Image (cartoon, rainbow, N blue to C red; front, side, top):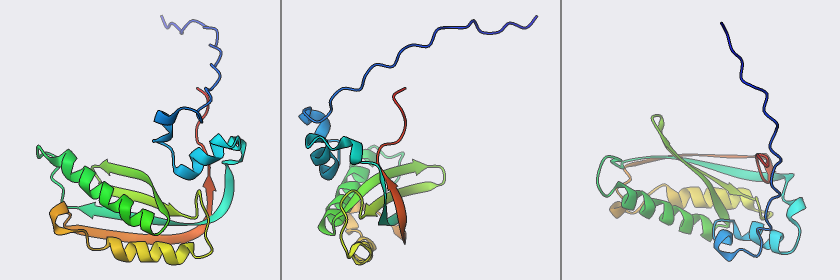
Length: 156
């Protein structure tokens, strides 16, 4: 005999809290996004705009080592400093069986006329990490096009 799950009433979604005043949460937001939210312009966060993506693959960290977290943190912080120097933002870090990758953007959320040049300059600076970071190989790609910026997902 096959049983089906009982029909349950849908739970109403709770309204999203006002995120702008929460300073602790703002440390997790990109500064330009936090500024737009504080100004009451959150509805204008999603848009299509020209931007430049920088993809970086890296090797050399032994994730089984006791200090792997410290080493990864040091590398990510160094990448963030380099990106910030060229007005880029780190959007994603992926670590998995296919390798370790970073994804950065130039032109989102803040646009500049020379975002492509900024991305290439950042890539040149990122190609040789400091030896103390234990990164043995870096591979990068840079692509320019139209990027969707804004929030993803829904209220549930």
